[in-house]
Length: 189
Image 1 (cartoon, one colour):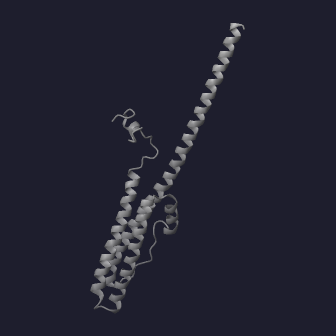
Image 2 (cartoon, helix red, strand yellow):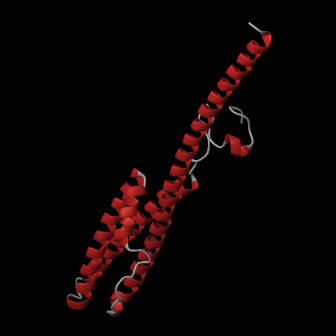
Image 3 (tube, one colour):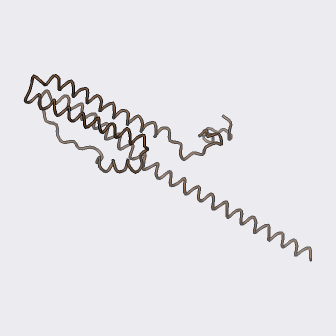
């Protein structure tokens, strides 16, 4: 066979091989980019739900504080208008929150319900049974403190997750994250 034809076959074969490898690499990179973009979208939705949760929790704690001051004066608090609707926020949390945050949310919710019940008993005793009011006040204060502690635990878990988020950054082979961010080579610190 003519050497020029052989060289052409080798050249064409090499070009086909390079094109096939390039196509496979491009496909793999595109899949990785799409997966990373999906993780980022989910993370953005999770972070937004977490920030709204902290906003509602802070409002709730301030409302409890005002309520404790209002009962002895027999003041009536206006109805609660949370910054974000809890029902919609709860649905977003169920969709995007971690199991740890959901567990803290459930514990804080239970403590909040107990606090409202104790608060209501104290409010009723101030109005109708003044002799029972001091004991109900102490129970309400303890319940409010437990509810605030539950809210604080929820906020702490959310902060840990928000500040410790590293899902979008590559991991090194020894599973130490941030290697590329810190400017170190793979496997060295």
